[in-house]
Length: 377
Image 1 (cartoon, rainbow, N blue to C red):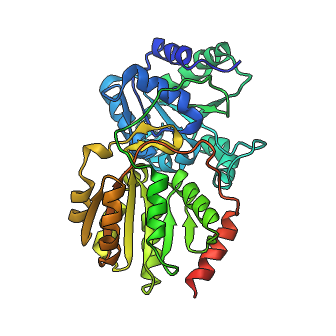
Image 2 (image 1 turned 90 degrees about the vertical axis):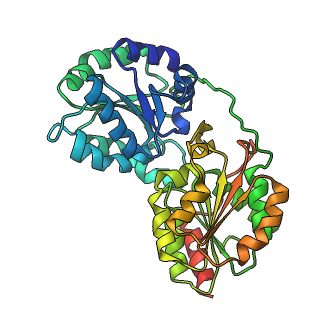
């Protein structure tokens, strides 16, 4: 069948669902694009910095209106909602109902990346453990099936203070895509290559989830440099910088570079305060900033609404730098690398990536072992 996202949203809307929040997911990109196209970013649609925040925001909406909010997320974000679901919204606490729309990455029997496999295996078990009734939407699910489930199963649950979830398999939604762009001239891939070309063989890199790690991996392949200098944080969005701090503390004679993204920085922004407080001299934090969740479809982040340079400095970073184009980046890099850490480099990039961009061909275990061996030298 494949579900038309406009029809799906209109049905929810008829049942009083008028508020949407969450963290974008590639499996839900058609739905997320439609919501942004219809509502924009405003009081009816807010992209949260992490999934736990989305649940709290949705709770505030319900407390104010008595209406059911919808929270969209990739199943990797279920970990971020466990605390607010079990200690805030659960019927044994405040009984705040909401509808979850969960993209099912790593679904058993469907090929996916290593970081999604375990989460995919336990997705339905986790929802059951959280007392969230679910319906899986596949390519064979019709809109009538959804309406029947919602009317007969979900509405009684919601009215009784329970949350419910649609779990969306790969290819279940019809395509709906909007073009996304910004005015920045520099691609992230060229920015990554430029930074790598300015590093030496002892410098270590911790790269964030998504296309940043993929582009770094491909450049190392192109240059035949091996991958021992790089730890690819293929999952655990938002944790690369604090992981890099752990490496930097325990390898004080090596410079440690974190390749980060704006969505990831915002997701667990308290890490900046920890890094600034620790004053680790050999930590270099690089933000490839396109103000978008580009790896999962390109919906905007709120990074343009804040001054990340001021934030980092106020958190205790020794110095922070901006680069808005390739010329500025080449001029600033030597100064940045020669500063004592912790320092931040905010590189403005556009929302573009190669359609033929590959994925790491080594396994996470191989990556870990190569990285640890390089660190020990």
